[in-house]
Length: 559
Image 1 (cartoon, rainbow, N blue to C red):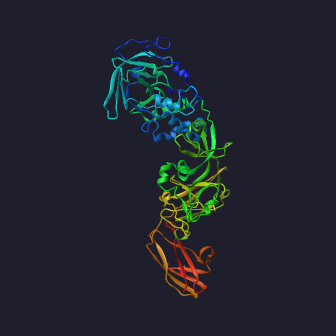
Image 2 (image 1 turned 60 degrees about the vertical axis):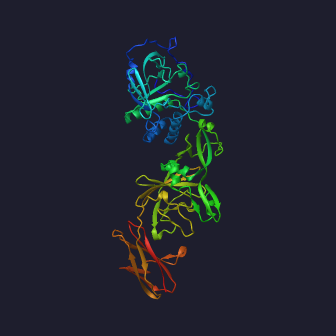
Image 3 (image 1 turned 120 degrees about the vertical axis):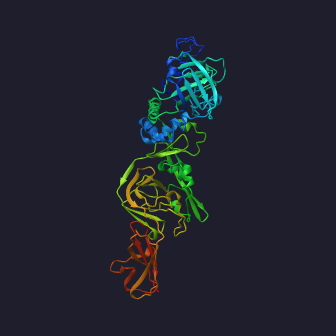
């Protein structure tokens, strides 16, 4: 029968399965009676092997199969975002820990659907970690490979849907007196499904009794990856063939770690450890100018721990099963963009259309970057405002992704952003969070995608090398004002491959500084000459750039 269509969704009721029962006490047309024999049946021979649990991190739900699960689910869910959410739902529904009376008390007996949701326990019970099947003999081993039980069994019945009923040949009345196997074999469906116990009638009841919400699923201990994927596909094809999802749409506030986890391919806890939620500002006003920022005044400064009123989609069965719905504000209509709220409490990647824009990008670093280790400016960016901006994901050519945050990276002028690789305090006194982007030095930025609320996201390709840091410095000897003043510049710790060249000379400081033209100065062999007349206290800044290293420079005040 392969995988049964358990109630993965409330509408899938399995009354038909309950009608297929047979046992050693049955006397009906649903089963064939077999007398005890010393020879195993063909089915018993076909399931010989050593078996471990199927739905575990060492089995078919191992992280290495996540992408394939998503691909198989997306076939029925409509896209990869929904496919990922459906996979989480399937995995959650098959990895429960309760069974029997405890599970029935929580999930009900299926008579009125499953208003509290449900989870099937597909693991091994009775202290068994591994089953060894050798013809008529079945042995259960614990986690330390010690024998829990070992009996020989005779098949005494076959149900009309292919169940194989086995009874122990011993006089035992332990928890392994009976086995009920479905028709799956390692050669046909790459797994086993079975139940066992000492109550033959209860083995056929899925939602009440001693074995409610329990069905063991097993794989060969030496299963191949190809067979694992074949079994995953089979599971999805059978359980999702009639899948028709319905959603509750809502908004909810999210921390940065929740907001970016799926986009960055990291867990929320990993991002928390990198300090992504601990965004603060030395000002208590600018953060409020971002319409979608979670913003808290903190003394003379502020905190910006995340994004407010983010659109989400929650499968109806999942929403109905939530014990606490208070974090969600239900919407009347489906939004244009949203994140799926998974059954494990995480949020999926964005389900949103993306528009591509062509921009011209420049990178300032070191001495030329006053607001972070690196500052990027985009010319040609359109449609990104403080009203619709929720965040942005920066991607490098090696596939690494980084989430940008209000005021820490994203400014009130969205066409500019910054990031740091080490501790940094900008001129207003704001300390930049840097641990998440600490490894970006030496990489090449390939894309930035702005995440916008209630509209399409905007993607722009980049080709910017993140120059390496250096301890190189340049300083100026003192000089007096006058006409055609020549100033000696002294360099130290310059890497051999830096090849620094003069890139700009400006007069004045801050926003009022003006760039000098080639007629206004000359430079050669460490000597800077300011053409024309200068006055005492005139301020000049000179910058040097390298293809490989951050900019260095110095400020000159004439005497």
